[in-house]
Amino acid sequence: MRIACLTHAPRRRSTCATFLGGDGVADPDQSERLAQLEARIKKLKAKGAPKPHQEEHYSQAQLAWRMVIELVAGLLIGFGIGYGLDTLLGTIPVFLVIFTLLGLAAGVKTMMRSAAEIQRDIDRPGKGGDERAKDGD
Image (cartoon, rainbow, N blue to C red; front, side, top):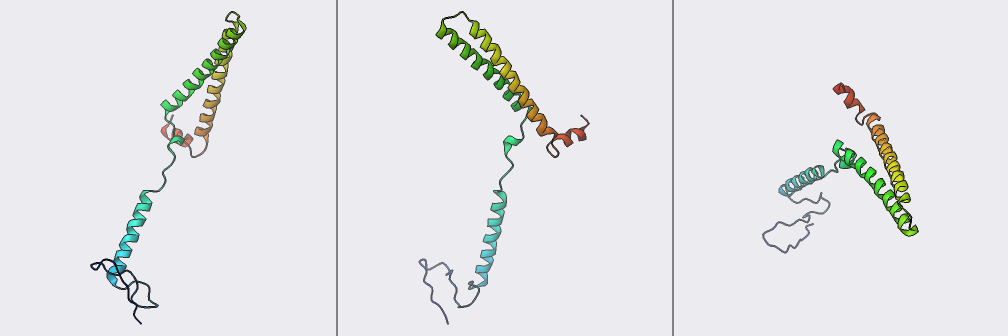
C-alpha cells in the first residue's frame, strides 16, 4: 500500500517513506545523503570535543605573578588595618608598623603554601615529575 506524502516545495524530494514496513528511506540517494550527514555530524562532534582545562597547566610566569600578588595583598591588608586603627585611636603609627609586618608575614606564609601546593602537583605521578626526570634536570 502506498502512502501519499505532501511537500511544500515541489522541487524537493519527499522525506517520508513511500512503503509501509520499510526502513523509512525511499530511494538510495536519500540513504547516501543520510550517511553523509551522519559523517559530518560525527566530524563536527569530534572537533567540538572539550579540551583540557587551560588553568591546570600554569606557566612559570603565571605562578610567579600569583605569588607576588599574594605577598602584596598581605602587605596591603596589614597596612590598611594598621592605618585604620591608628586613625581611629589617634595613636602614632605603632599599629601601622605592627600590622604591616603581620601582613608581610601572612603574605609570605601564603606564598609558601602556594609553592608547596605547586610542588605537590609537580611531584604527583603523571603530572610533570616524570618529564623533569626525562630531561635530566
